[in-house]
Amino acid sequence: MALLGKINCVLVLACCAAFTFGDPTTCDEVRKVFQLKQIGPVKLVPSSPGTASGLQVCGSRNQSCCTRKMEERYQLSARQDLLTLLHTTSSSLRLLLSRHLNAFQESFEVLMKQAENRTNALLRESYANMAAGSADAVRDFFTDVGLFLLGSELSPDTSLQRLLDRLFPLVYGHLIDPGPGDIDAGYAECVRSTRRELRPFGASPGILANQMARSGATAKLILQALHLGIEVINTTDHLQLSRECRHALLKMHYCPHCQGLTQSQPCMGYCLNVMRGCLASVAEIDPLWRDFVRSLEGLSARMQGPQDLEQVLLGAPMLLHKAVTYAQGNAPYLAAQVHRLCGPQIRTSGQSASSWKPISTPSIPVQIPVKERGDTLAGRRRDFLSSLRQGRAYYGGLADQLCVRELASADSLSCWNGADVVRSYTMRVVGNGIKAQSANPEVKVKGADPVISQIIDKLKHVNQLLQGKSIPRLGSLDHIETGSGDREGRASGDCDDEDGCSGSGGGEGWRTFPRITKYVDSTLRRVPQPDSEDPGLEGGGTRPHARRRAPVLALTLTGLHILLVF
Image (cartoon, rainbow, N blue to C red; front, side, top):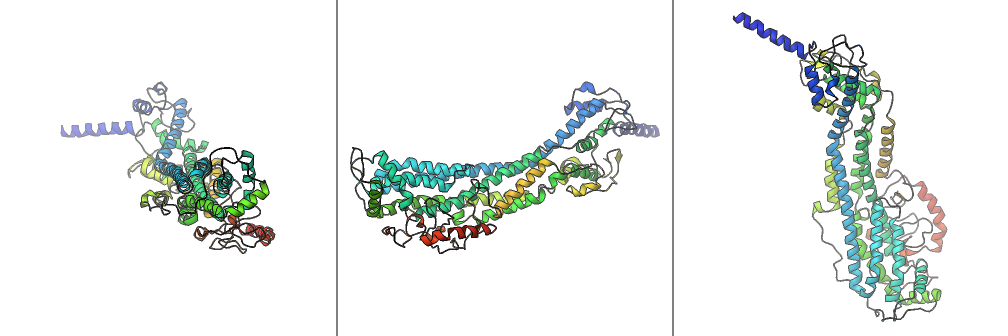
């Protein structure tokens, strides 16, 4: 009896083995999995195995539980399984990029609003009557800068010119040549038109223009880089799989089902060959992605002083206030020049404007308390890059990660090799990348995916911009510094901290600006007469001999575009 019991036990095990590993007498288990995974209508599954002669990929000498229509459904399911797995695997990296992109954009918006409010508060503190009229101009300026960061082609310098154009008639009517009533609209327009010639605001606008150009372009590039990072991930998540890849996925995932092997998993080497073949183009992103992370780290490290938008925006209100104070301090000369150019002042009837007010230091603190580390943009960048660094090898090890964690068998005794259940995979396992696939026994790779090639080109371009090796298209990132001066930010000509060498004027020739630490102090000086050699006009002006050097300087700067000095 004991012997008979053992024989019965062996027979039962043998029957189970036959059912599970390759000699099915029924397709019930196949139908159950087909229905559970929602691969297609369950009526497609036959009740018992039949010939496999009509199958394109899952053909076999054995009986099969698959039909041609089932094979088509299996192929669609295999493709969707991979895309879903890619999306799941990349979810943490995608979330990291999108979350910090939104956080940076919100931080910039908050900083813009704070700078606007602080500017209005400073002007209101010193020039109460004028401040009400300047509020709209100040608001529009910071709004335009915010739009520039989000993709607008209106540069911060152009926005600053508009602000100064709107401020000068107000400053003139309230502080330079006050009188009863408001300046006539036509006269105000004439006053506005004289600003670029008179340069009434001193060097402060030039300093601010330089700082906004540098920090604004850098911040905009950070946002664009994060957008591109998300685009890269979305592109690879929606990979267009080749016909050869789709067939290989079908063969690896679902062809064993046709033989009743619904629980089998591919051998590790077999899985690596299939996935490395299917993701060959994606693997080509790896060196560019690593470079992308390194370049973001490098740019972030350089975002200090005039490169740090947060610091620049915190200092912008004081620079704008100093510009107005400078104009007031040179009121007699400016009034005389406006009378010369526009004639006697014309005002509408109304209450008298503000009387002449001595220049005073605003009572609002110039220095803003330092925020906690995690509260600053610099702190957020550090936290972001620390997390992003962990994903720098994502594309290099993607195929391996999918096989090790999700797809391949961990059983050392049996696995699917594409044709049968075996103890180990004996074919050669190829490496990652397109070139390595020439020896792939499972997937024939004909060439690079054109969509992936496009995203690689975008990564190359943005990496060049992040590293400062490429001058961007005008109107896009045209203000990124490309190394046209020495470490003090001076051009190759005789330009010091009071020259400005650009200011807010009409944009003649090439222009550079002093760095943030070299701004003119608050001591006011009378604006010199036009024939004077003194350079202390708005933005410094351009002296006659400097104008003659402009073409030479332009050519010099063009030749130096590959350098980067932040």
